[in-house]
Image (tube, rainbow, N blue to C red; front, top):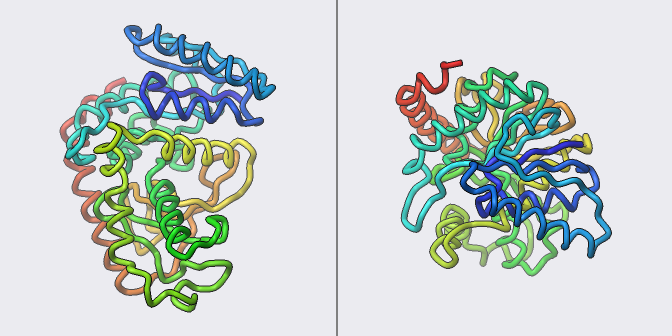
Length: 320
């Protein structure tokens, strides 16, 4: 399988590329950057080759600023854009990043029309919508990282609190990848036991845990300047499931057309079945009234933000 990473000079892009290079399902990896960053990306490729040799992994890695090199890609990771600095919200970088995402999405449609696009650029729900519209792809072929990373963060915090192996924690975050994320605690379980029935639940501070998940990215950015390993491994996780046609259910940012709570014309984090064709099916979910209200609020906020961004860059989306 061939995978291309656009924005490979960035911290998330390069780390995701290295994670993907280790996967058995990837034998051709293309690292796309701007021309002025090509030396750095070529250096990353050489460094990756040395590391992969130590693990007996054989994969072709190409560093390039020529977009034609994405031809034949099965999956394209779109991580190019302006990163957040400490104190910035994801919407603070929305307009400049939307222009970048629109430009690259049109180029993907031209050179790799059969590819699946995994959007990582923030604000990811809005950028997923921009990529979908600018590429002209079917909605099953364009989706964003978003709440899969949030779900992993929540999973990790629950694991630490209960001192239970992380593989036994099953939880899901929906809605916006941001302030209006919606943890679905009503169906969260540990070892098949609903969280509310698990011993020690009375001592679990759910609201504090949710706030930690909401601010997880900012915590990391304040400490080290950028998130890196968490997003990168989450990207690799999604890519592997798609390329191996694993039919697993993950929460990614997907275009909704009424499948959940009647929400339409917006990209939000929802459970989907992923396979080689991308999103095979959006999975409806039963929520409590509180969760449902929060999800509808997230839809309203993201829709408003999306409309604002799309209007601001309308020519970038529609130009050919």
